[in-house]
Image 1: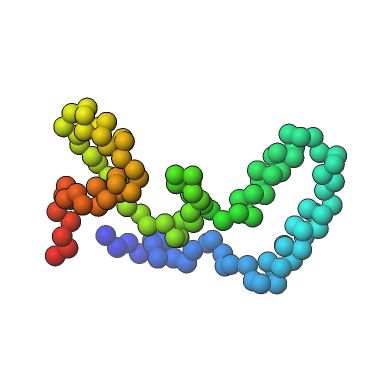
Image 2: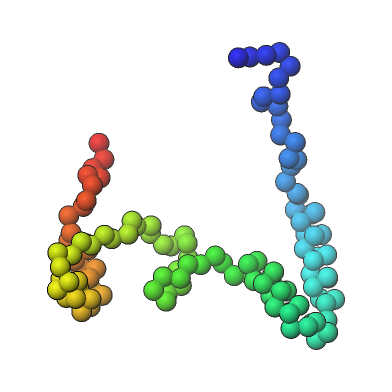
Length: 118
């Protein structure tokens, strides 16, 4: 219920984004600090920690699928395939199939749920 003087809908106190000039100054400061670090004086533990801290900013986020590295943006999200075997012979035969045959089998299988869009 509406009450006079409530704070709902009030402007956020998070502040505004930094302008380009401020971002550039922060970049210059960070680059200066990084350049001033003498890596030869760091212990191996400190080097590993520095590498762990810096890598997320240098490398794009990636997913590893079957040994291949794929960007998240390029990856199509599919539900996992569910395969039900009647007995161990069918399971054994499936394991002896090539990857292409397995993929074809999954693609040709009827859907378990009705996913029709109305």
